[in-house]
Image (cartoon, rainbow, N blue to C red):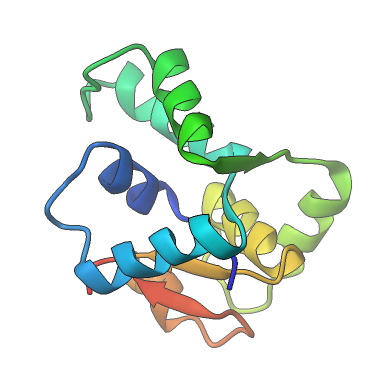
Length: 134
């Protein structure tokens, strides 16, 4: 099973945050071994915004942090016009553009979304989800 990491799950995973649940870690580790672990390029943008606003502090530069993710085997899925159209068409999903890009990425790649975001976990759309806290 392939997975897409929401921004919060990506941060927790790379920063080894204790909020990342053992089940979620097992699912990500399994995907690293047998299929794909992906992030939306929108997540890198979100992390850059959080760093610029001093809402999070990384122990290394954002560029190195991103490279470290790639070295773990995480793939970055770029944004494109088609994905933008898919993101807008997500019925009933809250309007946050980054979340829409991330969900559209998971749907396009037929992957489960690893997230702790209650709005994404409760969305009624056709998305497989893994609660990052469990």
